[in-house]
Image 1 (cartoon, rainbow, N blue to C red):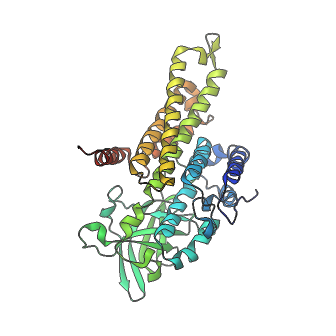
Image 2 (cartoon, rainbow, N blue to C red):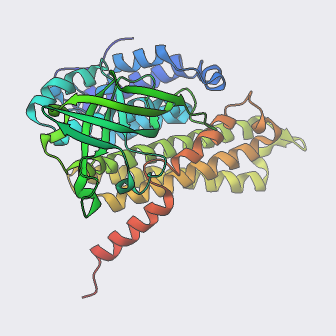
Image 3 (cartoon, rainbow, N blue to C red):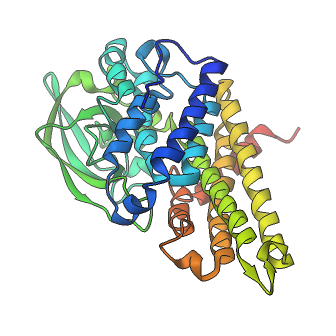
Length: 391
């Protein structure tokens, strides 16, 4: 595997080469093993090393910090291509990039120098530790606390459903530095939290799909870290720092949805031309044609919505509505296309011998991750009203 990383941001030619490298890698390295790894729920150590070589752990990190500095549109295209074959492995580097984004966007110069180059190479790998047992969508309801003690903070509490929690070695950790603050978000802070004494993994969480990436409970007991691990080194900014990357995160989840929707469509299209009933391929039956027509339209619309959100992000414009639309529509497209593709496959679609059952199990996560689709519709509506006031 040849590394693609360069000391400068990728130009159009470099980006095209990267896309070709991604396509070749997916076909040569990923597709042949995905079924075995997914069914065994085995962590893809070799694939992770290959993703390091491709520069994916530094995909959106600035070139000045050793990353590829990819725009959101290019990043979205990469996630779509990989997710059409194996969505789960995109979570390994996406969660990691959310940690990097928090440091790059809000960290001090010293924090950026210390962490971003190592995050870009994958030497340090991790994720975003926000969710707790009683606080998911309502992040302000977290209970984990950090108490200042001289030049350190002492942290206690637990997180759950944390991607890369087992195999990673660092997280961006959302805590309450002032549990009594009102409004509640003013008492929240975000820390760079490497694994060390006081930080342990509780258990691996078993899932319907999204296999081979570890989702874990994390437990912090008198976890003591230096005060300079507070991102930005100012208390009370954690809520905004944690949610500041959600637009890119939702573009990522939308891209995963596009990948699944397109992958399910491709599998259905291929199978419909091979499978015969009543003496002819089932793609010639009107009932199947109706399904394929709907699936193709959904996948295309999901792709265009996602690229629109990515382009808005790349222009530096507010895009919570666009990202919400993309995430909502693309994830529902993934869910609907996967089940329609399974129906086209008939009994074989329910078999573990065929790839469609994996896409069917992976798709529901996209409707939940980075904010439920119910929440996305509320965000869309609120922004719609705000952008279109009555004259």
